[in-house]
Length: 127
Image 1 (cartoon, rainbow, N blue to C red):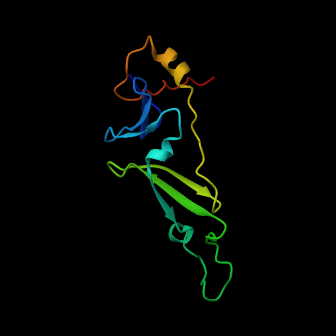
Image 2: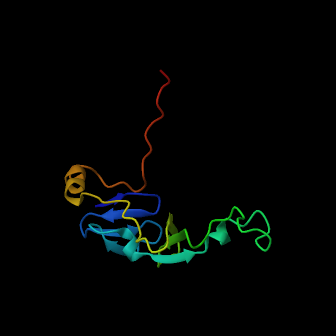
Image 3: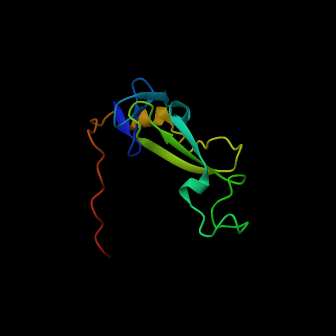
């Protein structure tokens, strides 16, 4: 049984593995951080947020200082789909943003049918 977790990630409950939803690539142990199975591009924040004023003339340009922040882009090694982006101080380890209780998820899905695509909830009526 495969359960959709994000736009780009799902968990195979039988093998307990994270998978890419775009190319079906096996990424990492589902009881661990999915980011361990992804490629990481450590971006200079000035590439993303260009200086507003001339950096040759001013110390502060409104662009993030790379000595204070870095941008990590996580991509699937199979298809290159960008899975996550995070802003972190240099030297900070990647965040573990999804810690899933696999045993509880297995129980929850034991009596359900596998979904080919995520299902959105119906719109709520105005009160």
